[in-house]
Length: 181
Ligand SMILES: Cc1cc2nc3c(=O)[nH]c(=O)nc-3n(C[C@H](O)[C@H](O)[C@H](O)COP(=O)(O)O)c2cc1C
Image (cartoon, rainbow, N blue to C red; front, side, top):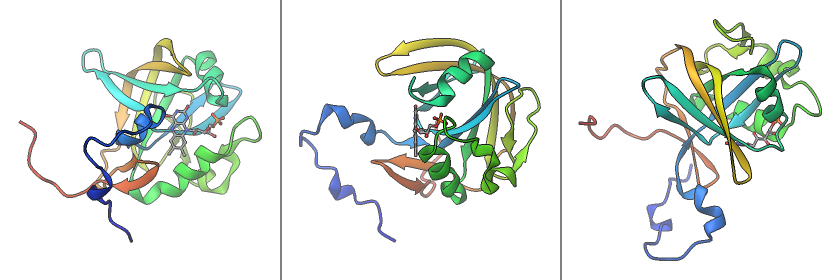
């Protein structure tokens, strides 16, 4: 398997500003939403923590996604931070839309489906950390909407490394260097 080549990053060489996001490593997560009638699951990488007290995270969702309006209707959602072994789920949920069919009916999701603790959206067992959120704000931001969720339940500390997206490629987290001060 090819290693990530640092020589590919050439200091000072100009790159397209449109593809700046490729240069920022992101976690690979699944966004699960249900308004009680409709449910959906979709891959989201533009996810970050934004506050500790209260515990807030953001996920940047394009209005083109089926998930977008469903989130606004549901007022809640769950984020599943995928482990490296689950990259096939990221590709599945990120290349099909809930506009066409219910991805939760696919074997890959159905077999791992379980009830969340605090939200209506189903979650996945054995796939990584699950963060259940109440939607507290949403801010249009360019061609995406920043959805801000308060984490109301967190579970599943993962023993396997999280899956990372960088330059449109999946990676597993590398080796431990030192503890953050
Ligand atoms: C690795 C990966 C990361 C993605 N990250 C995002 C993201 O952060 N925001 C977004 O709106 N779409 C993102 N997408 C695209 C959506 O997952 C994709 O359009 C999906 O089909 C939307 O499903 P939906 O229409 O059922 O909501 C990503 C896709 C992949 C494969």
